[in-house]
Length: 473
Image (cartoon, rainbow, N blue to C red):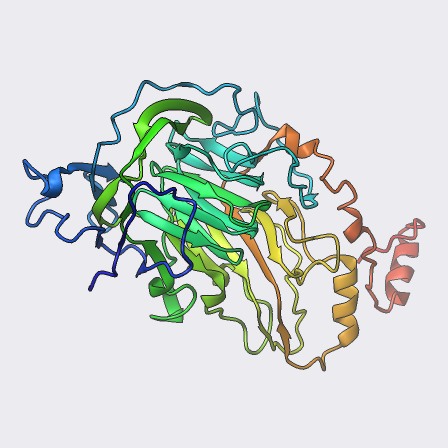
């Protein structure tokens, strides 16, 4: 493919990102990008002397011997290699609300339906790293199997530092405020209504051009996000590969005295100092790369006659397990769409699921909750915990009757992180004053509408000596 023009910046901060950034298009593609023409070696990956005196460095997202169709890696050609830093030491003060090893010592098992109101953005200066906190998760980053769900609230850009997550991939869902993200592959501008995937091991900076910002983060250990199979849907639909956008090469070549690499390793944060920017990659090629996606480009499918389709039909990305059809974590959205099913209860059905479901709301309302579930809020329905439409939604839907015509859901974007693992919840999430302790009341008003001729049943019960008023049949 023809390479988009890339940009060279010398001695300029990464906080100024233009609105007309060029991107590569595609998901899982093998890209190549040069900020200076001729910076990529030809015919080999690691020549004795790279063009322009650059260093060759590989980043591996999978083992060397992973099957070729699953193998992910990229080659960077950079001014100085990333190894040029002082030793790591524990970050002080330590971050008390990040978890990647979920057990009884730091998290709680709780099957209750949980819901949180939107968390206030702090008044004190808080960047993306300090504003990131874990809600729940399962498994272990050390054992390379599991997931964590975080949220963030922040009001300032990261300053003279970069973040690196050695534990897993981040899928970031901004809800308020744009994110300007600088990575080793280049720069991305991510707005609410878009998502960004930041693969394990990449160094990146988050700038906040709009100031106060809030959002959600899913993290997966030991696997990577991929597009779901389409099965009988066919060759097209859902999230199209070409709508995923990867950055083009961009670098800076200037001193950065005291620059800090902040590495998340086993859920703990460590600092290492260096005197240059990590964003010194002049050219790169490979298929292991950050990317973003605009959720408004999703092509939803829905039932056209009867019943409510399963939410898996709206899967954007999936992080698979070794068991066919079972996801470590699915990212599912509930976008604007038409509801046309006849003789059907159109909102999501009442459900007990072997999977666990964490939901968030980017904007608008959610079709199964008449009130209480707000943009920036969240809910958690764990494995086999009952959930479904609230009383107001049920009653309003039934009142419309079977003659309800086609209806378009508009101005909404809800999403779900769904996992086969049973999550443990962080104590600060359970104790938060943003937790909605009255959540359960939204279902308490559901009444019995059971109706039948009780005469014969009552007669039989009385003959059998049942005088309790509970009829058995």
